[in-house]
Length: 246
Image 1 (cartoon, rainbow, N blue to C red):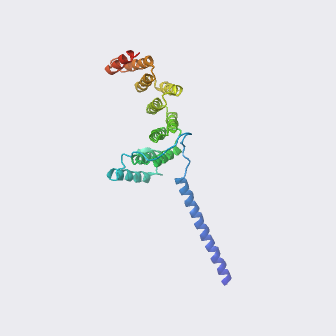
Image 2 (cartoon, rainbow, N blue to C red):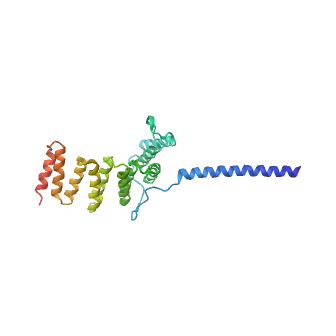
Image 3 (cartoon, helix red, strand yellow):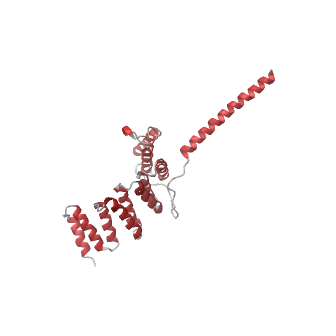
């Protein structure tokens, strides 16, 4: 009798321990899923981030910092909700981008990078916002090759959003001004969708001017002028200045 009771006790104990082990494993799997992932935008070869700290405009040790931290907690509380986007309910993609924005305001580039990456895990193919924001973040962290990839991916994901083309063109013409082939290719991509759009022409004229290609800069400005009704004193002055250059 005592022997049978002992066997039953051991068996019950083993069942309990097995249940606890399963629970621990399940919890560990959940934690791993939530806290470990492969970032869709690894640092490009040659890029090295010396410090992830940014000049956080809300990192004041006071009211603004508290506001950003409270907003992070609030946004995190919505994660895992309705993903339809209906009734203005934010999707996890939007929430991750929002959380990243708050961390950037706090000067925490590492966590901003992480949450933008988590947004891309949700959608890296059809939405350009997280790619665009990663491009801007990488510029601040001086990881320029990585930023270049991010800006290109934003255009690839949503080629119909002119702001992503503008951000890419401004970045390339300011940071990689000598890479003529890449810049001209980026202009061609933008113009194939938007034609002679004034913001694109403005970037083009500035790049041509910096490159000493004055006649091409003048042509771009003249197109801008026509788009704006044929009269613009600022454009006229710039054209006159360029014509006077040797």
